[in-house]
Amino acid sequence: MSRIKVVFSIGSMHGGGAERQLVSLLRHLDRTRFEPFLYLVYRSGPLLTELPDDVPTDAFESRNTKPPTKFPGAMHRRRVCDMSRFLREVQADVSYDRTFLMTLIAAAAAQQVAVPNISTIVTDPMYGFRSVAGRFQSVKRKRLRKLYSQSASVVANSSGAARSAESFYGLAPQSVGTLYNGVDMEDVLQKSSTKIDDDWWNATGSGRKVFRIVTAGRLNQEKGFYLLVDAISRLRDRNPDVDFRLAILGEGDGRRTLEAQVADLQLQNTVRLPGFRDEAAAWYKSADLFVLPSFFEGMPNVLLESMACETAVLSTDCPSGPAEILGNGQYGVLCPTGDVIALAVEIEKFVTDAGHANRYTSIAADHVRQNFSISAAAERLGDLLETVAATRLAE
Image (tube, rainbow, N blue to C red; front, side, top):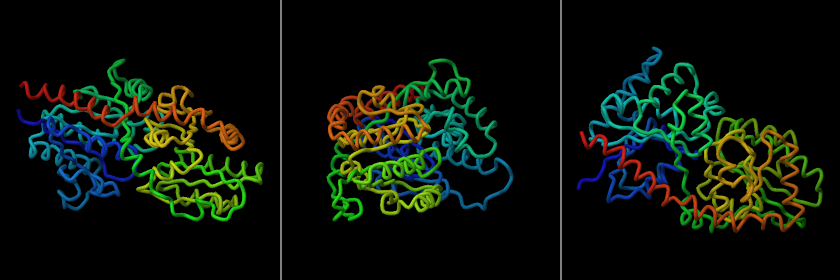
């Protein structure tokens, strides 16, 4: 029996959670059942080097050399047309896209050439749509409603995001399924064993009690990193005997704003922005606490990876994934969203009570291992791909 040909698609391979999850799924997808391909809009991003060697990868920007046009919608139509051609070229049995911006291209292309498609919603659209949708948002929202309604399957990476998507796009109740993200425990633990060779992070020669905090994500307003910087400033003033270290991993348009805030608060020796790090898990493992101060999320991989490293985690109780991951506070601490005082109070509990973290770390790692493994996530996705592809193969 021939393998099912699946075209995975996403905008690029930059270091976001959606891209990282796609890499993990491609690595663990059963090759005896599936033949995967990858279609990108832009062949760019540090995660390109982490793609499996047996996954053919193509990109719109390298397949199309025509000069851009300013006519509204022309570039979008060109991308849909090209992906339709790509689906025909590889004789795809099913199309799978991640992020709603890619759904606008991939679902339209797949439906144009009668290839059944699966679209994945990776953040709560009630909160995350407006900040990244760009121009013509009402048009895009209506188009997505139609594309989702005509898709073979639509899934979200948390139940909260699924219910929110149904409401936001006007979809039928319970029409959006849930497929949780998975963590590659073996890969995370291997990377976590790397020694962080950084005198600042290791606080060499500090002479005071050192408390290391790490966070990670795109450097933008929605991630709430500025609240965390503010909280650290307050904690440093209240705890002069503690040498705080805060590492904010990631890149994004908000870097300069965060750097200016750090300078204004005179936190240059307390807060650093090391950028995108391949060895992020080693930073999680060596930290005393991982903090996620986001205003909204989908199913944050960084939270799962930190828990896998047996590092205590603190997250805002934002829509939609953190409470689901943390069992409503059983496996980590939740605090109100957008409240810098509450954030500082909860961090201080970990600083002043050495046993506070131990209440969560080992049971959190077991929770991730049992419920969020990448092998289980890839198996669930494989079953869905097989079911959806059968609708075309049966024709």
